[in-house]
Length: 175
Ligand code: S3P
Image (cartoon, rainbow, N blue to C red; front, side, top):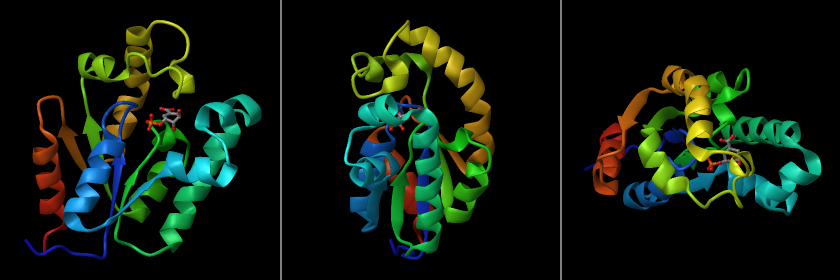
C-alpha cells in the first residue's frame, strides 16, 4: 500500500481509549512520527501531568495543550498525534485540530474504559477520587458529542484489534 506522507492524523477520545498505544503502533506501520501532547507538555514543563495539575492547576495545563496544537500546525506533517482526553473540549481547540489534520475518534463503551482505567488514578489527576464508573459516564455524556462532532472518522474500538484499527488508519493514508 502506498502511503501519503504529507498528512497528520490526530487521535482523540476518552482516557483509556487507546490513543497512545494505537498511535505508536500505527505510526510504526505507516512510517509516521508518533507524538503525544501529554508527553510533549511533560517534557517542556519538566514534570508529570499529575504534578503539573497540582503545582500550576488545570487551566494552565489546558493553555499548554492549545499552545502545543498551534505549534504543530506550523510544523512539518507526517505525524500521528495522540491527544489528552480533554483537549477537544476547550473552545477553539476542535477547529485547531481540524486544521492540524484528519481527526479520528477512538470510541469505547464505559465497560471497556472501566477495564482499562481501573488503577490509573495515580497518572490521571481527573480520575483520582470518587467512583470510576460514575465519572466516566458523567464525563462521556458531556464529551462524547464533542468528540463526535470533531472527528472525521469514528472507530468503535471495543471489539476491534489493534491490527484492525491500524488497517483503518493505513486506508485513510493510502494514495
Ligand atoms: C485528561 C486526559 C489525560 C491528560 C490529563 C487530562 C482528560 O490524557 O491529558 O490527565 O481531561 O481527559 P489521556 O487521555 O491520554 O489519559
